Image 1 (cartoon, helix red, strand yellow):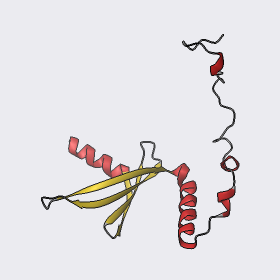
Image 2 (cartoon, one colour):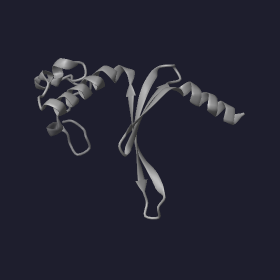
Image 3 (cartoon, helix red, strand yellow):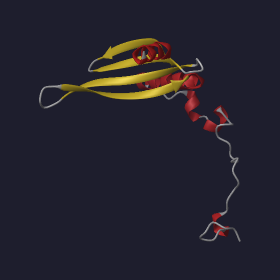
Image 4 (cartoon, one colour):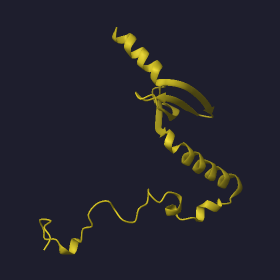
Length: 126
């Protein structure tokens, strides 16, 4: 029964997969679902490495990309691909990161400001 539960969980979690072979590497794009049925993407780079004894292993690197980040990720990827192809930086490169998402880069912290010059060695203020 446990094997059936694991299989159902995998099938529920894995929605869609796409493998892209690129030379010695393979990239796997896997759409998965959280328990709350939100979709996210895992991107896995897999490269075959041969050992001295003739056997091989796969070296894998994985990133997780959540749907709230898709647009920013795609924009960044498109920008760097454009730069590699043309040698020209996108115009957005010159904008301050504070202009893109001011909430993400607040100047004022939600935490209490601490003046370390006014603290003793135990962290107490004078």
